[in-house]
Length: 519
Image (cartoon, rainbow, N blue to C red; front, top):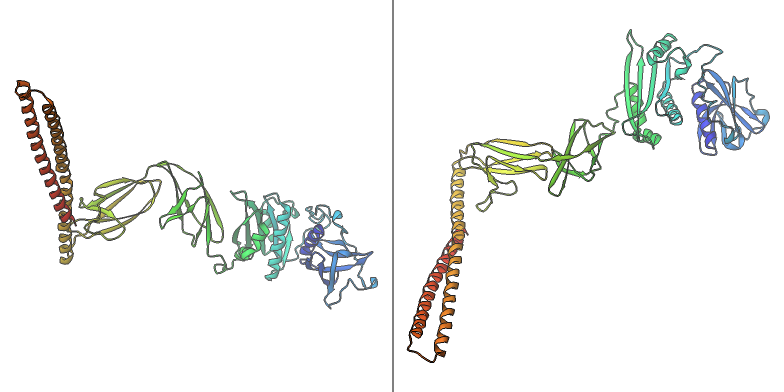
């Protein structure tokens, strides 16, 4: 059944273009659901005969009657139910093709006879000629379908066309020769088509050129369509792609019909890289598809951070509306850096998030330079007394260093200057408080050390005292020496403890004052 449908479609595409009908026009519907118009030539021995021109030769296709659901003529009569006597006999066709069952359809070679007619010279049935699409993909079935669809559309758009193949004019091997030869035979409009592969093997490119002879020099229109190889016909028919493709070749304005989006497909080596562009900090992780709304050039950046090492890459893409542009990137080791320079120098750098308060921590002072481990949009604020605060937002790509030069504008508003002065005083007060809190640590630690050493002296004095209490004699030189040693240890312990406690007290006092000043 599938082969029967293919054969019927091939014939019917030519029947529509026949110069002179050989039988009544009928509407044919197969059991498979295929519907089309044809020339009815009769029914003989349960075989339906349909005819039409192929390469200027009238050809009959014979299909088993059991394959049909209906054959209705212009008066509404179903000829399948008519008597054999009512059937029209075939009128000596130049060529006959039997399609009684699928086994008898031999690779469509008979229906696609590429050999030029040897019996008569080429005569055009219409001044508009469609030269069959060139097959550069090795898929004759798909090329045939595209030819048929294109011919059908052109017919429905009001153009009566004559279809031929390049081999029908054997003396020509290129389009220029064909163009001249067909023009000499009376052609005023010629369509040249081609189907080829694109860089990605899963996509195909359809190209169509329309040559119109109006003056001494012909006018040429061109169109192009990208479709999926695996779903070629589906893609061609979806979203009016084929219609727009042919309208564009006819020189029509199709801007309002074209899809308003294009797509960019990015894959990276290694996969999983973060994709971004200047206006979008993080789009997705590769591989992924990025939608765009215009044809302006887009620069896509990719970066991949692992073990504190950054890998990156960039590519510039020119989108095509209604189509997908493919790009692959191999990432390399990168070390991007952000340099910040101000005039005048000495501006403090703060995070760009939130307001600058007296407790905001400064990141650094200009001029400054920072390594970047997470490329993308970086925001920071600059503040210098006597100048306006400046918010800077800069995109740092993963493949190059970025230098930001900022011309600080002088502050002339009295209130703002006064606010800056108050802010500076508060900052100095906080810095003083932090300094005091920091300084207080040293005396507290030293005081604690002296207190600890004094306690050790007290422990040694206690041990000597215990030895003296256990001694049997109390008047000897050794005894008196131990007594003096005990007194010295107690005196040293007292001195160290006093110093230690004094230092601890001073440190605590300074810490308290610093804490009070800070808050």
